[in-house]
Length: 251
Image 1 (cartoon, helix red, strand yellow):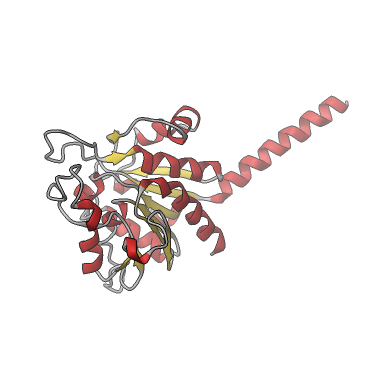
Image 2 (spheres, rainbow, N blue to C red; image 1 turned 90 degrees about the vertical axis):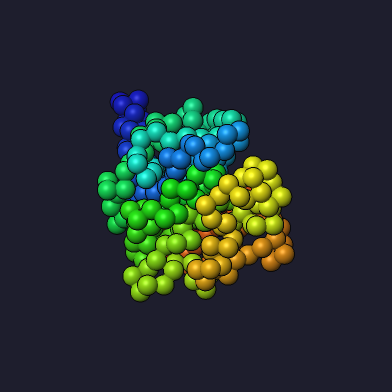
């Protein structure tokens, strides 16, 4: 009898946990389908694994459901080897299963999401930054009270998001991302000449208060302003996700 009672309690506990997780809500992660960026040396594929997998791990480990969406749906390309958190989330948290069947924009209802995140890699600058199907989804999530997060080159992908009043979402907000000062010194993107836009320039042009290294106490700081959470470099991608969760649960 005692064993049966304990088994019932255990079952109820797991049902309760799963119910709580389902009640937490959903987070949308936008990724790129771009593989060929005109670089014959192919330094990177479209998405940087280290800027997408750690945030995914943070979201799911805190009980949120995560969906991936890309401009054309399906499997998306990643660069970098799966180590650390990335390896764990691939092995135990169905990262590959989710990202290899990314949704197309028409399958996404913005009302279902409490936040949207875009990681780095150069790809999003090519096929997300001006995508007429994805940018309105970001705008809708934000105007519904949701959180927008980005790391590295990700913030460049939402620089062009326009709100219903015609203003750019980033206007008069502190935002950071991969800075020009670093871009022009690196061969990865041919000193920036490979890219369709320079992230820092695009954010400034659309009214963002771009935060450079001189504005921050540390180059890996996370910047939070009016429900937009950003960081310059990949080591802080998981921290962006944690801060996004804090912002979700605060509002």
